[in-house]
Picture 1 (cartoon, rainbow, N blue to C red):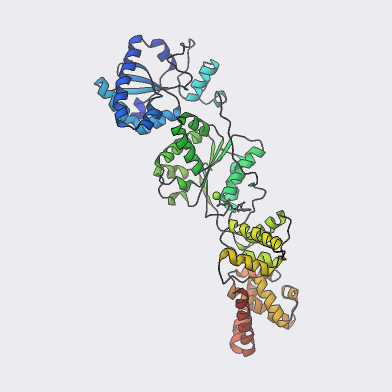
Picture 2 (picture 1 turned 45 degrees about the horizontal axis):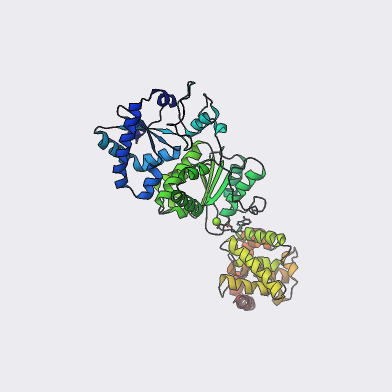
Length: 498
Ligand code: ADP
Ligand code: MG
């Protein structure tokens, strides 16, 4: 790698302009004409058109061959894919080992046609400085002075305005990813979270969160140069740019943003050329201190079919996961989303859906939408029966989970006790027994933690639940009446759910 870089260098603008002789220019043209014959035989016509047609031979000095190419990206691509082909062709034509020096010039500023710039110019180190130099006639453009970049393409951010931090519900399952996303949107490119990679299963809120970063930057006026793309869109854009011979525009577009979001990078798997161009885009942005945010369905190290060097780049910054939402988060999401739609769902309906639709948030939303749709189309009340119908059709299971609420309802009904007493402080013996039996069944029939169960019984702590559980377990062994009560309740609950 090292020797390549050494022989594949840029050269001073002024040297080219003032010191080329006709003979050197002629020699370069002839040499290049012969090289093209060799190259044409070795690459397909599409690649030839894309990567070799745009090269302009400038001059041949000793065994140094100077060529002009349209962009930094172009040089990287040549270096990576055609370096040996180029040097071999050149060596074959010249009969001696030659090196290639290149000059980056935008296509409309053909150096071979431009009059020499008379002032002493700085060494050309990037397309940015050269563009600026040609456009503004400046002689001391700093390589880092990106304000002088001639024309920046207009960016279509493609953000969904609904996906904001404000309506992203915080929960234990997403708090790390959310905090990282917030940090990045407050200081894009300025944290060590570059790239920020958010990963998690489908429907867990990755797309929402990465949009929220972009929306935040646009809304706070930090920058408008924000670009969201799916990995598929990036791939399609790239392929199209090759077909339309506009690879330089493609690369300039993607490199001109302050925030680049690429969603679902797992779909880059197996697409070698797309990964290559993404790798270069990534490097260019990272070097300029621009923020990169990626999402994926797995942690980067587990992505199959992705180039090692890309995976290692992905691990430069921060990787944050989103887990499936816990019960409390699912409840909060249902409340918020139904509230946004102008509904207040009955408590038992919320509990029931949240207990049964557990896999992801998209499914939870789907459930809510079909609940509201069926209520209005069938002119039904939104109650537990309707919720059961909807959940059954969505999760497609005959047996559904039992909720703590449901257990409380059935136990109280069976024992003829007002439901609120079971959550209240009262210590009347029959209520205490009902409460303990309901706690016992909650532990047996739901996946809830002791803490969650305690919370459902008027905020009692987990040791109370353990005590209740043991009491009921002991009494069912010694007291046939208690045993039959628990059995009856259990089968009633299981029947209800069937
Ligand atoms: P992913 O990209 O991980 O597959 P999405 O971002 O598309 O998931 O999320 C699916 C749906 O769930 C979207 O409508 C999104 O708004 C919603 N959603 C996900 N997480 C949350 C959350 N924490 N708060 C509110 N809505 C969420
Ligand atoms: Mg998504």
